[in-house]
Each structure stands twice: as C-alpha cells, then as structure tokens.
Length: 416
Image (tube, rainbow, N blue to C red):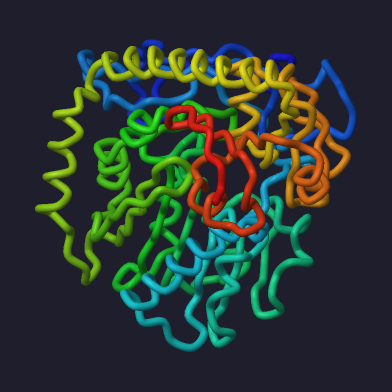
C-alpha cells in the first residue's frame, strides 16, 4: 500500500495535542473491510497501530489509529458489510428505533437523518409520514434494499449536503450507528451535526464501540483501518462540550464486542443533562486507570494468551482429523485472521452474504463460500463474529455443530 493511500497523524484528532505514544501495534495488515475477487498480494495494506494522547502534557487521553486511510479505497465496490443480513443486528436496530420513538415524539414531515445508514435497515422501521434520509457513500450500492419511503444521499455527511437537499429545515433526529469512530475530525463532524439539528427539540443518537469494554472483552478485532477512534466517555464528553452539546442519556449494549449508545442535544435545548450518571461513569473510567498505558499493556498480554490457547485447540482438532471452516467473513474476523496467523488451519469461510461468494479474505486468502454449503461439509466452525454468540448457540441451524469462539477467551461449544 503506497503512502498516497494513508498518512501518519501528527496530533490528536480530538484535542490536537502533539504528544502521542503507542499503546497497541497489530502490524501491517490488508484492509479488513474489503473482500477481493481474486488473490492479490499487491492489494492495499497499512499499519494498525494505536496511539494515546498524552494527558501528562495537557492532552485529552484519546486513543486512536496512528494513520488515516483513503476513504474511497475503504468504501469502494468491494466493501462488504450490510446490516440487513444479520438477524441480531436487525433486532438491535429495531430496539433502538422503539426506544427512540418513546423518548422523542415525531410529527408529520419531521426530518430524520441516519448518517452511514448502510442498506437502510434502521430507517425502514419508521413510518412513511416522516422525511427519512440515509447519508452514506455505500447507499447507492445497497439501494435495492431500501424501502420505498426511505430516501438516500450517496455521499459522506456534511452540513452543506443536508442544507442543499433540505434548505432551512432542521432535523428532529440524527442517528449514527457504528460510524462515529471512523472520523478524521470528530469535533468538526459534531459541530456540523449540531448545525443541522433542531436546536430546541432535536436529538442526536450515536452508538459506537466503548473502549473500556473493548479492553475488558479482549476485543482487539475492533481495531481496524476504518475505526480511527476508540472512545471512553471522557473523550466523548470533551467533543460534545466543544460542539455545544449536552449528554442527556446513555446506555450500554453488547453489540460489536461492547458499545455505548449516547443521546445528546443542543446545550440550549429543553432536555436536561444526565449529570449524576455521567459523573459516576467518568469516575469509573478514572478508577480503571485509563489515563495510563497500563491497561493496554495488560490487554496485549491477554491477546497473546488467547492466541496461544486458540492455536493449541486448532492443533488438537487437526490432530484428531477434523475439518475446520470459519463462519462470518467480516471486518473483525479479518483482523483476527491476520493478527493471529491461523489461516493454515482453515479451509474455507462460510458467509450468508451471497455477494461475497467466490471472494477471498484479504491477506490470508481463504476462499469464501455460501454458509449453507460449508455447514454440510465441515466438522468444526470458527465463529469470527464471536460477539453474536447468543445468535449462534440458540439457532437451530447450528444444532449438533461444534462452534469455536476465539474471544473473549477461546471456547469450543457443541450446540445442543
């Protein structure tokens, strides 16, 4: 991957402090969200290294990728993720819709914007009396999955994009799921969201991986070229303060190895900040020692330990003559495959997305086939999207199968 496809940052993306130090290095990896149609060792690759903004020099403590990667390359035609293929994600997005409409009463023609709306799954839950629009560069690729009452703008979000389509109408609701950590300039982005939001009643709901939970769950596979930032509440609160927002609610869920969902509103809006809960969470983060490198040093030790245990299991399975496949050709899975170097044990990856059929995992070059055909031919299945464990062990489709979960600790389960 040439340097025209990525660049090294010189200062913190949040507070612009120039003092950064390394906390995790997963080496050079092929772009994990791209599924090439042929084996191509010259495909784009780049470093996966996390640095932390140094609080001892007045920084905000933000943890972030040391490099920024080319957006058109990452989100081009070979970009593979689609929300509507995962029943667990569909149910999660439906529950988000239900909780939001209880909190926020939407009226006819109110504007609802979903930033990075992917295939339109989330907006599809809303009734047709609203103005519903997804802003996402991949939306054109996924347009056939959009419901007729949901519009899309095939571009990256900006204040100007919104104003060019809706003039002076302010959004009553803005949502952004699993994308706020993808931003080169999160403060600028947040300010632009505030500028398109109804200042009195509008809400912005943003959900992303929660860094302390990522550490707790050993979820190193959250680290990928797309995800530039790894947030604690302290850093999210800093950004919201800089952008004239107040935090009115937050909660946690187990999506993507542990996420935090935050509801914010303009600081002059009618909503009250959840001051007491916020203070307690910020204090909890201090007590975890997140202002130092120590949690990351422990994290690396646990990652190495998990890898060793996982490889031992794979060796034993192979010794016993069992055929091993993986399920879920995913961004997170590609990080695991490349970091742990376990592709020699795996013959094939099965996936429910038929558009990936005939493609390869980047860097490890494992062929991807239809999941149903793989299930009938193999003995043991590595579940790369391990954070959906409940879905797999409770699904009759996998009854009697041996499933191997890599994280948070390696576990071999026979589904009963």
